Length: 87
Image (cartoon, rainbow, N blue to C red; front, side, top):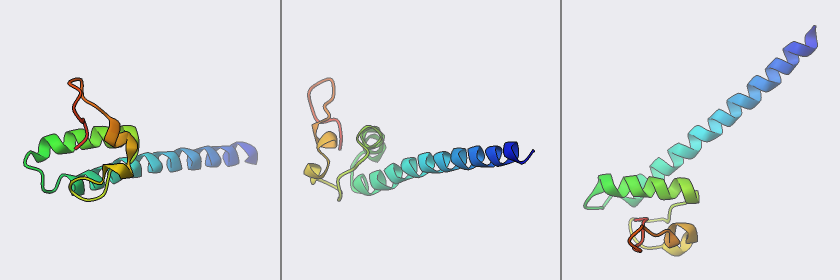
């Protein structure tokens, strides 16, 4: 009788920890993009594309401009027009 209870507890713990990891990943992109776009003229557009790039690349360069060598994926992502996608 104890085995199903233990099994349920272990499964619950695993699910809870995976949901926690997903929520912290999203919030880290939000925080990094808020810093990256803090001085942008069009913050709404900057945040939109920064979050797209962060979700795909799992990183955002430091500072408000430049430093793209810190994250090659972020640096190399291009729009359909061939211009840099990530701010």
